[in-house]
Every structure is written in structure tokens, then in C-alpha cells.
Amino acid sequence: MYDYSSQAGVSTLNGHIPQQGRTRVDVHQGLGDNTLDVYMTVDNHDYSVDPIDLARALLNRKVRRVVLAGKVGNLLDRSQTLGVNWSMSEDWSMDFSLNQSKTVVGQNQRQNSVSITHMFRAWSATLTF
Image (tube, rainbow, N blue to C red; front, side, top):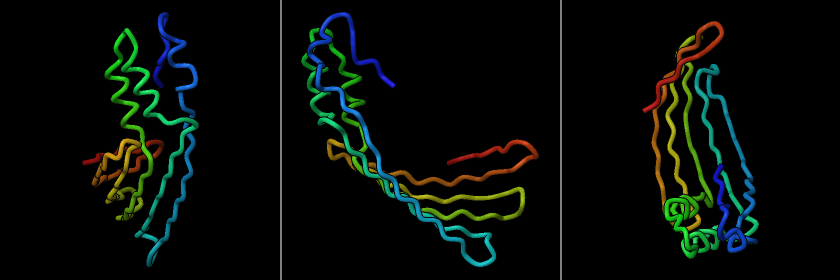
């Protein structure tokens, strides 16, 4: 993903680079004649060390890595998704979803999406808003 090491200052980061773990629960339920599918996903992330410590270590280095520190601060803590998938025909489907996430620094993020998919013989095309 990202290489946080460099020629200078590698010892500064020793013990700060977290290993990320994720626990995910997916629940799907078909409704009616299987043209409508309701789903919910819950993700919980945990880290071997506090990722904020990595951001601090990056900011304290002689060679500034401010952009990388910002990305570390954007790591997810937990996320929930609720959605509905509608199979309009054998070839067409539409998906509506709402996602809410919280980062390790407490930032709340929200994403709503609508996708339409067309299935071809060996591939599919999806347009997402």
C-alpha cells in the first residue's frame, strides 16, 4: 500500500507501523420472487498499534511526510452499509446503498450510491453515481 520507510529515519518508525485486522458481517435477504435483495454489512477494523502514533512519527521526521500522515489519519475504525439490489431482468440490475463510516481520528464519512449494471455474455458493465 504505502512504503513508510526511507533511507533516513527508519528507526523512528520502528514499532509504529500497525497491522490492520478486519471483522466483517454480511447479511443478505431475498424478498418476493428473488428480484429484490436487501443487504447489510458491518465492518470493524482494529490495529496492532495506534495508527495515530504512525501519523505522529511521520510528522516528526526530518523529511516531512504530511500527505502520508493524513492518509493514516483517514484509516477506518468502523463502517456500516445498508442497500437494496433490484434485478430488473436477466441482463439489468440496479443497486441503491447508504454507507456510514468512522475513521480512527473520529471523522464521520457518508456515502450514498446508485449503480446500474448490464450483464453481457462474458462480462458486465456498471455505472455508479
